[in-house]
Length: 360
Length: 272
Image 1 (tube, rainbow over the protein chains, first blue to last red):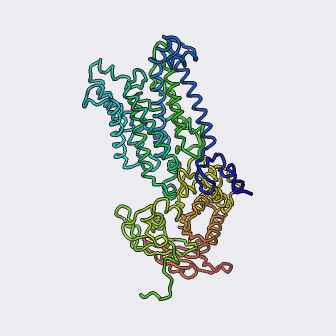
Image 2: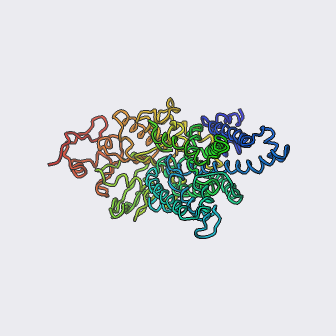
């Protein structure tokens, strides 16, 4: 019997996984793919694609799917090309990227704090980013572009929340409570700035405060695209260690994981992704709560559903924006309001569902 | 004191030693200048009253606490010189209270024990599979391999956690009160598993609060009080009425178990 037959690849992989050999069996070089996670990601990707096509087709002017896709690439009726390329494609891209970034940031933060409620929106990052971005729009302080200011705001909010909590603590509760306070303070600052500014300036800053994909700037979108790519690469690098960080700290350290380093890495990615997403879409923080929840339900418990969360967040954002545009057309409902209406019951469900813990 | 000329070096007889170990929480000293060596391939039980520092000692041995002074040597090398994964391949720790991600099965939990042997481009090998199967068998969990931890009894769940530590394939295994919250039958399951591990050539150190079980299942006993070692040696040699009174403030009658030769505590009562 040959050596290859002694260790057939299918017998080598543990239950529920595919093993991708990267070398001879003896070297052990391999990557494991979780079957259920792959199926979940495929399902979410197909649903996202369908939602994207629907988003390009539907609106005040309805366009057939074939014409919409042709229009996206500049073919077909001139009016269709204009509507799809100029009005809908940028907005769709903004929805996909910001939804993905919010949800990936949410999944990272939930995992590092070992608490499903610990999403950037709930601990005040969104509000911090919004306050600084609104300040920039209103011309308060320095004339830095809103995305950069949002990044500064999110970092400041995180630093304050961490400083007050003195670290992450058991299941992140101290961090959560401190963050809720910090978020409330930044929200108050935003309102104060809006109340004290001229009505035109306040109107210009208004979309920032509710969350909207209307009129997205090219700079903010480009920065988000780059940020999301970096975020996904970073998350993939941390994925295995993050799977272990879900265990209690002594167990994770006993398995050779440098918990502090991994948490810091995940936190930096989470703050960056949230800030860049807020700069595009405003505070649509509940996507960060619902996206990972959907992904966890579809995916397996063996790993952290980082890719699944990203896809689910993008899907949710595109669907929420589509609903906001179509439901009460021609009146447009900001995506932030839709996600809040859908997200609030999910939040209550996480808190109240019987027999389940709040850990990740 | 002179060391006999023919005595083997300590690092041969003991894989894990601490010298003049001091650990403080804030300003409160928990361990004050503790010296200890654990015998190779034997089961050591650390006993002592609540708050005597036994769990802290175990955490320090696993490098979860940084000592203010002193050093810990693993196979003769300072543990501070080990890399994180390297240490996890040499020494496994099962802390007292543990939590796992929701919904994980026994086999999936045990797979995490292979983490320190794996890397991003080496996620699963034939050896990983064989070791996980062997750990399942050692803990007698084959029939329950695909049952979620939440659906297991306390004893089964504890055996699954120990199996995860076994899958780390470390020569040294540290267990912090592995039988707390287990009833008599489940506790015995765990103790017999621990005896089997030592028989197969693992050095096991466990913190126990029950002196009776420590005498019954440990080869070597370490009695601690107020952050210091009061006595260390085989249970039949060091356990005395005086030691029991010093540790726990109780009087007792000591008898010898005719089946095992281990000391038994009878008629335990408050010291007067």
